[in-house]
Image 1: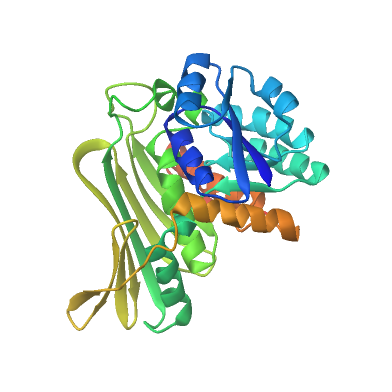
Image 2: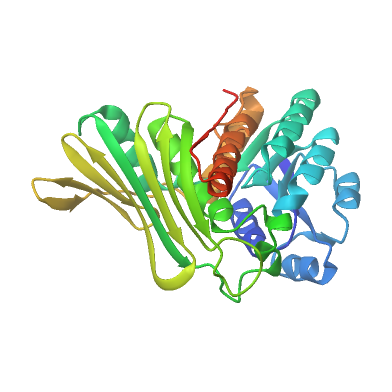
Length: 327
């Protein structure tokens, strides 16, 4: 039995605790948050002990796995400390707020000989996995382009204040939700984004983060893609369209998958084997036991952060930016 401890008692920590409750081979033993009352509330809902200091928690509980769900700017310090303490790590995305921080984490993880998985949950939705199989099969011909659209009320009063401070979040909708789009494009097509031309806007009612992004990107397989995201309200939308020489795919993660041919779409059945967070933990356990880096490794997750940084760099310069990766 592996012991797991949660660092950060924000909203997403409850999803992790629920997933861990379904795991027979991992037991959640503790949760830490600088707001100890918030940690106590989590411990009242789940059989875990509450701490105000994650370092003290790790020293006392000696978990095999830590789950880091802190504000983005705290990822580096916490991940490095936990790696040096010998804990395997599940780190919420984005991996860090810049590639320099990612590189420091990767270096320490390698030296500490532990496993790091970053929480790119797009990999664990049934319709996404089936879309990947269809894309790789070639049954719809050559992939010509990808169009990804996401609209959401990013400035919701339910979103914690730190999300609106770029120094803490690393950025706005491009960093937080654009990471999902970049990951989806890269993972589904087994590629890396290598060119970016982008523009962002700052019309939000609070904070210094961008509220929209429009980006043209190209993968190292030569596939052009567009990413369009708005956080100013309106009607929620989350769709990715794949255009091939012999048909189309329309993907709405968590909602459905459709194949478009002969002028109409038909639904593709997608049965979810287990909740995405449970599948994520299964992958982490497999990585630990086989001593093989997970699919969402530090190196892979760095590529997502690098592409987001290229979006910001392109907006500032008004020029196309080449993305450098470590593969």
